[in-house]
Length: 344
Ligand SMILES: Cc1ncc(COP(=O)(O)O)c(C=O)c1O
Image (cartoon, rainbow, N blue to C red):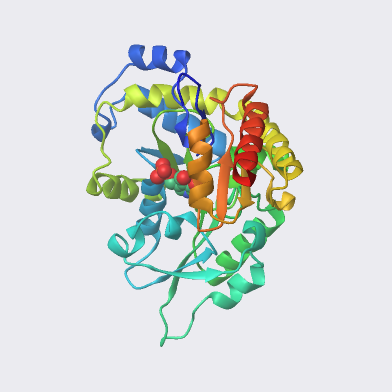
């Protein structure tokens, strides 16, 4: 690779804290957050709760922890959680459900991440001979479906179904601001009606670490207890929350660039003959079908383009704020080169 600058399209989690974040981190006022005495964490939690329209928010190290604490708060061992096919909560939170809450997944089909609400209704178990349903969870945007957006009408229908059945409904909103941008509404509209929402600061928003679980005040003490149980009581976490505050305040408005870059990249890759379902290119992700994903990713890596192979025939490009303006045109040139090398 020599001195060539690597273009990292593996994930929006690879972003590094900006100079402003570094300054805020260095200057952060801190205290012991396990005693709720870290003023910067308290400020971040209050801001998140206010922005998302919730009574409370709890800061945690990762989106996996906010999702799994939600499961712990809502479910009991042996209960089912209705999830959309490919949900991060199950597919990429390695054995967490089984190990922690002991809940079991029941998947409903979700083309482009969008379930048919009636399928969710039918998936609810009422019979005493089956595992009782404990929770319904949606994901918006839906990562494995392509970073796709779930319409508000579908969310509302699912929330209604949950309410009628007396079941809580959780949103894995790791990228809720990406969804809000496409839906043309504030993030609080996307979060409205859910019992709990998980959102990540360390993806497109650019913070180095951290996620928030939004919840009603009555569930907060239990969520804090589970956070502590899992080792997520981080003491002077204000050092990290200081960057999180900037991410929450300034991150959302930078996402339009990521979405535009993803679209441009997808169109360019299609022109080069790659198989892409453009219907799934809605936010900052581009999934393409290739013959041998691991070797394709390895070839691009040699040329200085990092991507993830997700499955034997699927690669994923993700755009984010740390990619330079010319990243898409450079990447397209390098992909073309990789194709030419192969056909030689
Ligand atoms: C949809 C979704 N939920 C949750 C997470 C978990 O976040 P973390 O990596 O911080 O545990 C991710 C991370 O990629 C995600 O894409």
